Length: 621
Image (spheres, rainbow, N blue to C red):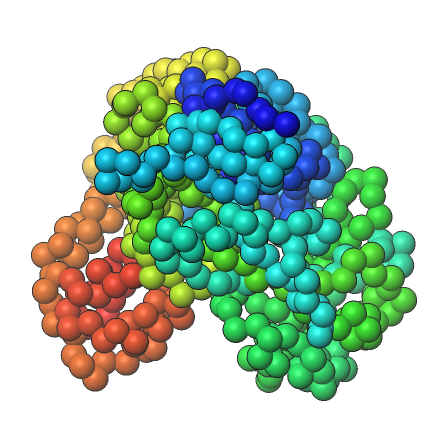
């Protein structure tokens, strides 16, 4: 059967990267289609039924501010919301939600129905190119059943499907994830056109039957009493919130793992590819941290009504009988039944040095890559790349300037900048520590940083545009009033606000930023403000803006200092492992390459400006 339509953009893959890419492309006016194996693949949470976290939560808020759907779908499907690092500053807090796996797919289906996207359920056999005029350019796809489909651009978002290979004990089989076919034919295309390919791996834990777990033996982990949504369009969260639970491995568990390491494909030489450093397998944790007597396990429900529990923290590829044996040594899991056993999956990805900052490949015009194919890990990182690839594919077709967000404006920019340096030695995961501007790139102000951009390029929905313009107008009015109102320390003291008694007048905006000062105190100090009614959410955002304003100049000075000191020499005997604040990943890069000065260090693949700032302070000291 032949498909006669011609599309502007075809997205290959219906995961988080593919969905955001298709939504953005369609919303910017491109005739868009998604090609995926099966309808059930759309919006599948392949691994952990959770969204957000440190760095990742920031990305979701930014995707939402740009008009993406991951935040809205998460709000509609969330069954427990928590802000991580709540006792620390807002810049390093990370919103996270436990997600109902089935509700997420249902809600995505409803959201996607509002977009003009065509779905083609098939396998991509090949990518068709025009190779005349001494350059390679996309002209279409060859599909296994539907045949040739013409298009101007293709966005590849294959996740772990590209030549995917599952390992479980001594057994191995080809798959994209459990019970799904791999994308093998497409892998040959990248080989044929001399793309630099890497082999990476990731793992997943066994899924447990809820009724077989004794939760009374576990610690209870509740969500926040006042849950906060991801999307700036969500006014309130309506789903029932559920508890998660915590248990731990023990010495007996660890001894079983140690006795069976030779049966683990990670340790017996079957797997040689690199996995995500910050999400190691249980075998890795027991081996690398042998002195540790226990490891934490989060027992997370996969849905409100279902009976599946995800034991976060024990990804494993040990044989199934060994998995069951070690699980039953854990408190609360003594009689556990397993629904699906854990496994490791290896897959192909393309070295991200092959892409421009637009996510278009350097070798082939009109071919874009987004998600795990670029060497990242995680739903949020994938969705972020899909959003940017979809926008840039559509802008290119309109012959408009590309959207390249700078590091100083968003984690979206940090992600893009880090990836296009290339040289990743393991799957890339977003952290707040990767952003040298993180005091400015908070999750609370993502709309302030990005929604005007979304409105300008056309990715913002009508509702978002109206809501943001009204909010911006009101925030500006309130802040201008706060700046106009000022008083002496003595006057503030009358209303319980204790500040330095230096006789210096301070504006209401400045004083509001003090941690211990509340909006109620400011309103009592300046009665005129009482007439200004704004939401609790907006009050919080204005207060956070006030608190962080004083740090922005300091951060800019650090950036300027880094520019001036770029040729500062690094001693050849320096021990990078002693430099506090650098990740182990960056320490390995520096130790391996031994740069002669700060400028050389900055240029190393995988090195970030944030790490360069930390290194500069260490070298100067």
